[in-house]
Length: 360
Image 1 (cartoon, rainbow, N blue to C red):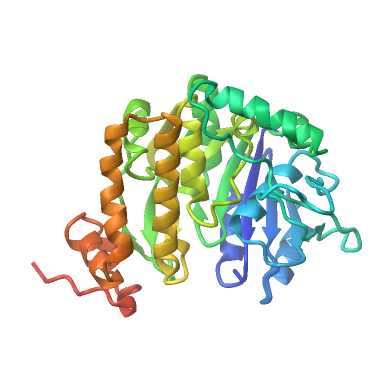
Image 2 (cartoon, rainbow, N blue to C red):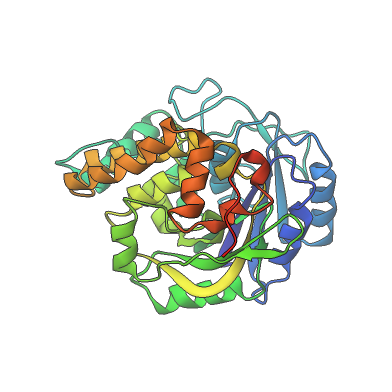
């Protein structure tokens, strides 16, 4: 198979069925959907079991304890390399800050417990050596410690890795169009798509503008995250070189990854709307808005330290810094009134203290 789709979910019983069915309804069929159930306590596990039994393309891994999105994504990245089992990535007593001792197990083999962990520690700052030398240095360290992530990724069946979120909806031609684009544009390594905002009932409530040009995306990346994480498709070899998600980033782990990739990777967004992103009070960018912003600042600082962008780009730290100190009601008012993100004034979120926009 050419594509492996990664989906992580925690207590997603309300929307996860619809999300998975939208992926199973793709016009392109040759893919595996790997779902990591992050120790859900609602009916999610039963829904996943039913869907896995009805379609062999669905494979489920269950975390025994709640590990969070970043670690679950790295578990998924490792597991795509070994369809018959969950690949172990760390010692029983992990020594790296990105690894963890908690186990994950296959839904289809509940008695077998593994020890998943992060894919790798990300490249460290090294102005002389650069990103590739950092990757090589950490690869040597991982080999010495018995961590086999790089070798595992080289054995992966899929040429491309795609993401999907547990409360979003993929349009039927999403995978086909992204695959065609990447095959026809070998210089592009990762592609997202335009998307619509929908509310909890599936009603379209907004359509943000997306940047599609690769050079413009690179320039924009230091000041904003121009990709919908759940819409991207990326070449597996690029993830191999980057080492997966940095588990020090509990939030904004995707933004950190894009910034680490920016030195050697070309990006694109398809202008066609192929995804629907659900706007609810439980989405990470709303429920954990402060933490999301702080981790984004940290990712930008790291990019500046690595020399990925010129130092004058530090000016782009000012706006998110202000967003961490101003009242959230003011931040959300500014999003809607000053920065054109009127979806943040939608009734779905108003209970959180977002001022009502005046009628015009």
